[in-house]
Image (cartoon, rainbow, N blue to C red):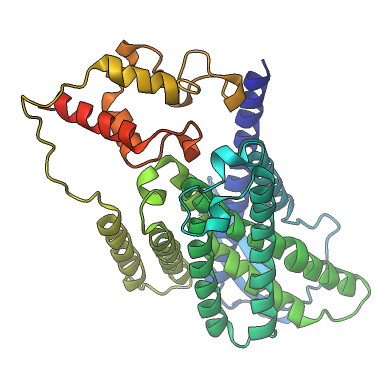
Length: 406
């Protein structure tokens, strides 16, 4: 029952997280489009009232007229719309999911026993949890310091963009060397998502509150608050596509089980940012196809890097011992059915077999033969090798699969 309730909590949290993320990212993308689509007001009345830009749009059977005031609208309504709860809900639900799935089973999901760094490979569950949380905090602190020191008045945002890009390369490299494969991708995405939500919490909303307070007091708002809010909002929009990709990557082991996983991750981040740049510029009336073309080229490089290395087909000679399903089933029962059984071992926290794959009978194992060989050979399974599958057992499964394909 406990495993079932954890699974149900996972489902509800994931649902909430996706809903909040869709709402937040959708609103963010809409406002970037609106901001870049503004045109100087044509009417003298609008100009005199302080309208900076306006946009007419048609949608849902009606017409919309949006206007932007930089700092001093002629009136400020009491029912002013604020955009922050979607951001906070996305981050809080995401962290809750991370805690429920990863922090409760750190040796299973976080520890990287094959890390080239001995200290990382030997981290205990508690230690790796602390490192993961500090990683998120450090990511925000470094990013925030780069913004404050390189472009405090938004005068060197180009240089700041380069610095943030370098930072993400470093984050990708460190995460893949400290944490297990899919956790590394997830944590890198979480570093970006944490920075996005922290931008809203520490900079965008406080700046907007100061602007509103100044207007209500009959004072002129400090324009730096508006500029800084715009800067952090722009950063957030470039993070969106990479974050979504990194969160989805967990389902695709060819990304994070590759020896060049940190390069693959970095190229995905840059590809997402380049593709997003195209749409940002398009909303401002500039068609720059070189940006999405460059993004697609980076994805093609990823395809090349991530492609499985071609190996000579395994020859099965008549003299070689034939691997039987019974031998393979012995390995399944020793290393795999703790999770992949009709009733998984409660110790591993699953209420049902992951992906519906059962291996507690020879018939079920034969049914999933190709998938078993794939995830065992690339060392994706067992997760974290918690059940200590040996290289000899992996080789036996590979030979068994080769026999089945001849």
